[in-house]
Image 1 (cartoon, rainbow, N blue to C red):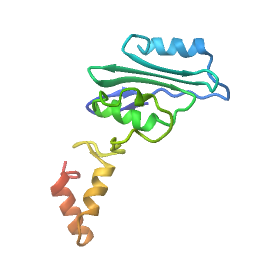
Image 2: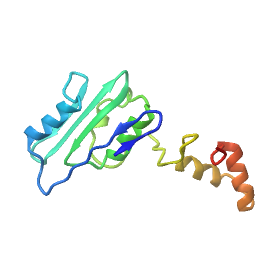
Image 3: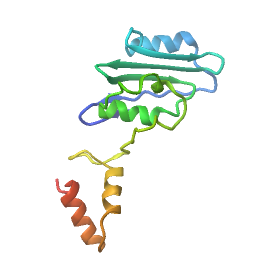
Image 4: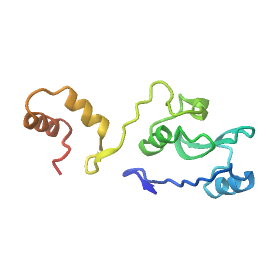
Length: 148
């Protein structure tokens, strides 16, 4: 599945009843360039967890998750937004769905023309009072979404 607008990417997912063979996982990682010295690595062979994160110029460029893939949502946010990961360091390797403290996931993009996310629209609507029409007008003037 392709994702992104300004920074595009490819999301590849595969599932099975059993953990992937280590040889196959390594071959996939090599194919996606996740085998160099700029790659952060985590392996827990007992539980079947593996992570590879390629960082170039303080930005996340590629990710491989095997086993616990719950962090895919917030890691995809870093990939897509091009936000610096320099201060996160090895916290990028942590398991689970909750992102490191201080990261606010933008959510899905609702307005592709102006790259406005669902969270931004909800925040703007929550701070606006009046009728639905007045709130929509205020949203349009604030974020310009829906004006293209």
